[in-house]
Amino acid sequence: MGNILHLDCFGGVSGDMLLGALLDLDPGIFPVFREKLMPLAGDMPCDIRLDRVERAGISAAKAIVDITGSAESAQNFNEVVERIRRAEQLSASVRERAEMAFRHLFEAEAAVHGRPFEKIHLHEAGAADALIDILGTFHLIESHDVTHVTSTRLNVGGGLVECRHGTLPVPAPATASLLRGFPVYAAGPLIERITPTGAAILRTLNPAFHDFPRFTYRRLGHGAGDRDTPGFPNILRVFIGEGAPVVPLEKIAAIEATIDDMSGQVAGYFLDRAMACGALDVYFTPIFMKKNRPATKLTCLCPQAHLQDIIRLFFEESTTLGLRVTEIDRLSLDRTHQEVETPWGRVRIKIGKLNGEIVNYHPEYEDCAALARTARVPLKRVQAEAMAAFLRSDTDER
Image (cartoon, rainbow, N blue to C red; front, top):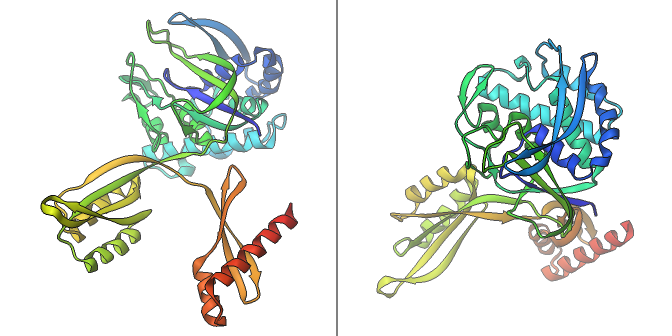
């Protein structure tokens, strides 16, 4: 198993901060890194340097991509991708990740400006320095044999930022679009702490968010941003090491109501409606309320995107006058299906994988029940045969 990379984003994230921090893990790789990335500048005068600077008293690596005399015109997505694909000195997986990051960036700009994707042209992000930041980051992650990425919550900063389209609030519109669904906060002096390039890389990495993962780190690096803010270092800190496999956390909502005056028929109807509205799970818990009344605690788990629909459903279809809503972390295995052959027909096996390894499996009830009814054999016999067939096939594959 490869390494875990943990990003401590208390000071923000940008392309140059990521490059600096990842190079700081092993500065000796910089000459080879520079040789591989320099061709991305094309015919433009360019220099890539790794300096050391101080940010609020902390020494950090500063990755500098110096492109002088450039009058590069705006580029659309296909033009950027063409430059990425020509970078054959980098691996195919690095180029694929970079292409995905730029796709995220173009999609965010299209959403912000309300224009078709193919009509969007990037200026700053389409330039050679952004290509070097993005391709360089993914190349370094690959060089460090990183297979899992985790991150703290993201400090977006605050205040205003000067963009090509004018003075805009932090986070800038494209950055705000790219960070949807990620846990964010604002702290420290009012500056832009997460750039669109940094946000596009994060969106592509899709890290699991932890204050700190359970792992043993061997090295740490510090990458500096452009600002030196007294008392609050503008740096990104990264840790690399080994640990237990990381299961991505998903933020979902738990909605609860305690009800003592709703019939079972209405409760069953509510369950069906909630599942149709996007709920992940609905369940009833018997409880006793005031005046010793038997009652039901109605709990619904749902994605944040469906929260308002489910809240409305509670008030329309149940008898509750109030709700409790809690944000919780959900962990779930990757799920696939595999069909196996039994003496009575085919059965799907539900398979749960943790980081690619099978850790759970069970035959689909509906498949087994249908075969048991048709063949007039006990259900548990069909289930046992399906499990045996799956275990035989798994052994044969290994």
